[in-house]
Amino acid sequence: MCTYATMQAAIDGSAKGPNGSWFHVTDATVYFDHPVHAMADHTLNIDFAAPERGPSARVGVELTAASARELVAAIQAALASGPS
Image 1: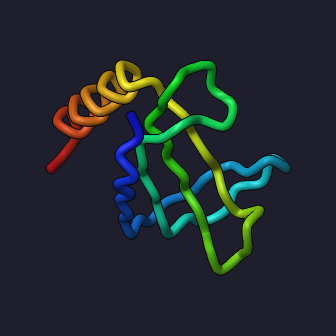
Image 2: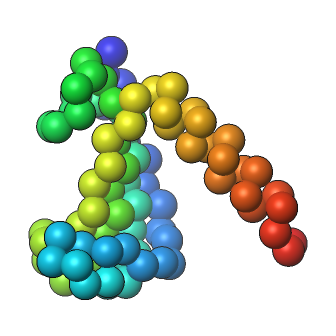
């Protein structure tokens, strides 16, 4: 079921784009909706972007709900194992 809830976060990181070049990303958009490519009815979609560089400076990810929960757990575990 689509929630139409879109969450945004200001981020500071890097992403590797379609041409193989790295670029600085400043925005993350997260929403649960129909995927464009993934073979699932609904996915958690995450877009990492650098809006000031135009629409091509974007990396999108579509994850099943189960995969997204596994990713959240893995991120939390990785952060917990590092320095504060």
